[in-house]
Each structure stands twice: as structure tokens, then as C-alpha cells.
Image 1 (spheres, rainbow, N blue to C red):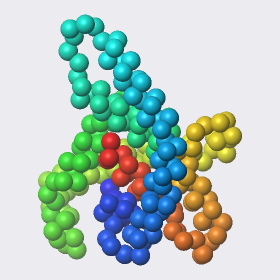
Image 2: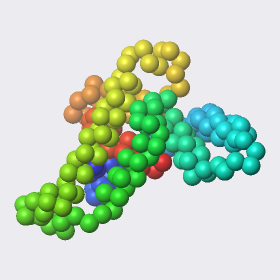
Image 3: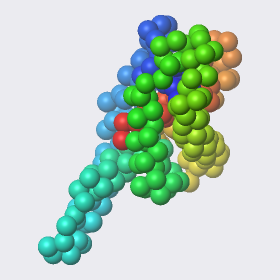
Length: 204
């Protein structure tokens, strides 16, 4: 569920799809040209961190974990989602909590992981609450991803001089592949984009 049926690259099995997604990351999303174009986000967020530390009262304790998370969230969020990143939709601490809980769910034991074809295993996960936690987290994150994609589908977005981010690049490829039809190389769909965004979100 959280991997969007293995469309998220990280959990995708080795296949033609995995090779195409790897090529997409290397040639499009993480190319040297695109990474260099994100320098503005790194500079802006580091400036914000330095200003925040400088404005702290003398002798006061500073929560560096929160500050460094804010830096990481700001850089990855701006690069991936533009200004519409997690801390703008949830409270920052809430978004961090959702991501932390997602990692715990992905790393936790479930019966279905060991017996994927077993109805009894799925029922056992319902009884232990694992299925409910997974569904609740998925709904929260899925709503956020939908809002991000919808915002990037607005035709006037880039006309307003907004810096292009990774979602813009994915939406552009998605539209081009819809126009190409059956000849589309990656076969991108909305769920493909969400799967990629899941990986980017968990990297924060």
C-alpha cells in the first residue's frame, strides 16, 4: 500500500519497470544540470538556519534535531514539492511524526509480509492493528500528495515565474506521455508520481 503497489522505485522488484525508473532518476530527476539548478534552495535554507541560530537568546538551549530536520525538510521539500512541502500542509512536528511513523510501519513485522497470499495473515494484521495503522498513514500522505500534484497541474503555475521543481518535471513528463499514448517510454500515471514522492518524503 505505502509503496503504491511497488511503483516507488525503492521497493520495486528488479524488472524492466525498475530499469526505466532508474534511468528516469539518473537522466531527468537527478541529472547534474537539475541538481545544480537546486542550489537556490540549499542556499536559502542554510541562510534561514543561520538566521534562526543567530536569533536564539544567549545561553539558551537549542534543539539541533529540530533545526536540522527543518533544514532537511526545507531543502528536500522545496526541491521536490516547491514551496508546498510537508510542513506547510501539516504542522512541521506533525509531518515529521507522520514520516517517522511511516518508517516504523515499513520496518515493523507483519504477517502479510511473510505470507502475502494468505487471507489468515491479512486477518491477523487486522487483529494486531497493523493494517489499520498502515491504512491511516497512507490516507494522510495520499491526501498530501494529491494536493501537491493538483497544485502543480494548474496551468498558470510556471507562468508566474515559479522555480521548476521535481514535481513540475514529473507532471511535464506525465502530460507528454499521455499525448504519446502507447508509445510512452515510462507509462507514468498519477500513482507513479506519488510513489516517487513517497521516496523523496522518506529521505527527509
